[in-house]
Amino acid sequence: MENLLKQFTKYEIARIIGARALQIAMDAPLLLKISSDKLMEVKYDSIKIAEMELESGVLPIAVNRPSPRKRKEKLQAVKEEKVSDEEIAAKEKEVEKEIVEDATELGLVQPDEAEAEDASAGPEEQ
Image 1 (cartoon, rainbow, N blue to C red):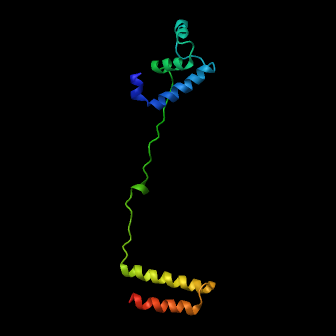
Image 2 (cartoon, one colour):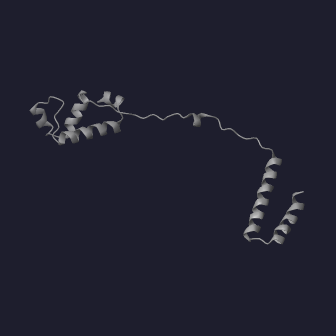
Image 3 (cartoon, rainbow, N blue to C red):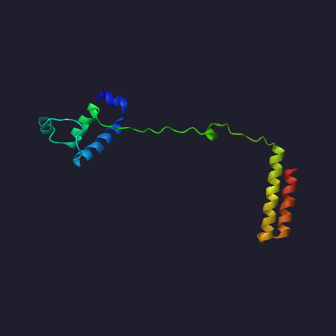
């Protein structure tokens, strides 16, 4: 059993024994020659029989362990754009101007109110 613990995890062992025990319970042929005395000793328990088959190594089993895929996108460094403070301020003014224009077009703000906001915002920034 110690050899199996090195080869498989406890979850894999449980899955293998459970699947094989289900097969045995549904009258699958035994892969191991077991005497009738030994079968009587384990009381024809399909889980015990599956354990004996696994320990003897007669089960044709392959365990697939997926490994994480390394993607080039994740491994590349993030490219950062270098933008000056003046460019950021200019972009913010453009966005604010577009917002005010959209608000006046939709009728949310009267044109004279938008001009008053622009006039009051101007001296504070300078």
